[in-house]
Image 1 (cartoon, rainbow, N blue to C red):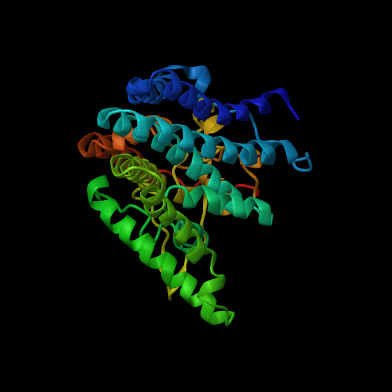
Image 2: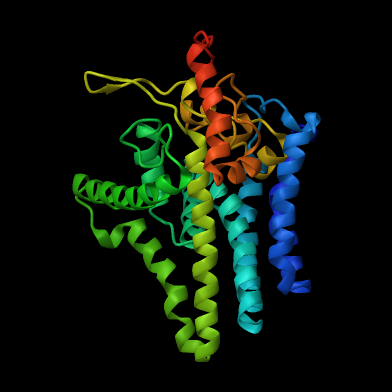
Length: 352
C-alpha cells in the first residue's frame, strides 16, 4: 500500500465531524455542513495541486484495506443516523430540520456512493452492506436499477438516470426519480420470473420493509410529538440523500449519447461519461469521478480506477452540484464543452 492510499481514510472524516458537530452544536449543524460543502468546492476550483489525484493502485495489490474503509463506514453511518435522531427528537423543529440536512448530506454524498461501490463487489458481505446503506435512505431500488438498468443503458434515451442535452436539472429529477423506481421494480419482477423465485426472497422487498420501519416503530415507543419529529427527521435526511444521488446522476452523463444502429447500442466508451480528478472529492467519494473507467470496467475496485482522457467537468462534484442547480450557468459551461468534444478528433484507444 502506498502512502497516498491513506487519503481514502478521509471517508471517515465527514461522518465523524458531523457526529461531533451534532453533539456539540446541533442547532448550527446545517451551517457547518454548508461550510464544508462550499469549502471542498472552493478547494477543487482554485487549488491547482488539488485538481489531480494520485495514479491508480497497481493490479495485484491487496485490496483488504480499501474494503475495510468502506465496511467500517457503514457502522459510522448507522451511528450518524442515530446521533441525528437523538438531536432531532430532543431539539426544536428548526434544529431537527437542520440536523436532517446535515445527516442527509453525508448519507447521500458518501453513503450512497459507498453503497454503489459495495454493490459492485462480488462479496456477499459487501453487497449486504450496500443494501443496508440504501435501505437507510429509503432508496433500495437503486441496488437493482443501477446494476441491471443504468449500466447497460447509460448515456442512451432508454436510461432515466442519463440527462439529455438541454434538459434542466428540474426537468430531469421527476423523470429520473419515477423512472428509476419503476425500472427497479420491473427488473426485479423479471428476475423473479426468470429464476422462478418468490417476492418473499427478494432483497428489494426486505429493503423496502426495513425502510418503512423508522416510519412505524417510533409511534410505538415514543410520545406522539417526539415520534412525529423523528419521522420528519428520517424522511428529510432520506430525501436530501437521494436527491444528491440524482443530481450526481444528472451530472455524470449530461448531454452525452451512445449511438444505436439496428437495435444494437454502441459499446460504452471513454466519451460517454463526464470525469473529474480532483483529489479531495475523489478521496471522499471512492474515485467516483473517474466515471468513464468505472462504466467501461464495472467490476474494477475503486482504487484501481484510472483518470481517462474523456469529457472533463468544469470542476469536481462538490462544485458541479451547485452549478447544476443554476441551469443557465450549467448550460453555458457544459454546452461549450460538448461543442468542443463534437469538433475534436476521436480520442486514442484506452487500454483496460
